[in-house]
Image 1: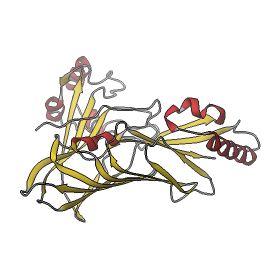
Image 2: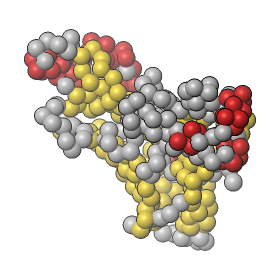
Image 3: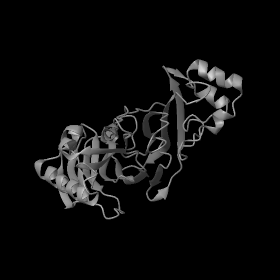
Image 4: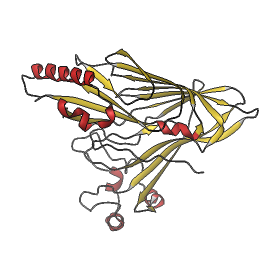
Length: 314
């Protein structure tokens, strides 16, 4: 089977764009409603699909992950979205996982698997230890096998043995859409976020897709001033920026437009006394529920670009 995998939209930090579920272009199934909630801690999406024919449609549906590589000093660890969860009409659904290892256009999946190496986790590389503890699966290889992987370029050298392949991964399942009825599909996962300390005066230039206006710029200045007072001037007018990328255009593999779309961008539940502001570029009606909660609504929405939601904290 063939799926369309969106291009990776990595930021200069570690943000990784992921999006909604998709399939091969299917003009018979419409997305009647989408409710997208984005926080730095979780992305959750509810879809209501309608099969507009008088017969059931069964097809493969996928949640593709942008290609990712090993990053030994990643702030957020693995980029494989391993906590992806799925429900259909309120019931948890199992799914299949496909992961391939590619390097310079060649597929090394079978070779690595034959050596007992899980390609998606880079040999179960331990990201949690500081410094990281390496790959237990790679460490068990014989000197001859390890040397062969170095020769192929799959490991950088015999000493570090850092994995060099790119992972192409997706979750997929077979879904039946009943005729003329709404089907509710929900999924959620922990995003891989971008993190940076940035000077207030440079925020709009650093994040040109944040749509920061003059009013928000003033509020960001106030947050920075609050942080300066807290640290006795030690922050040098910097503010913390976190961002989450989301691939909206996966919706275009279904019948367009999305009849009823809503985005809720919310700050984390636990703020430890910090103040938050949110900003993103949207082409729908944006309503401020609070400084930490923005809602964008749009009817008959055909996404033409993807989304980055920025969270600023003092």
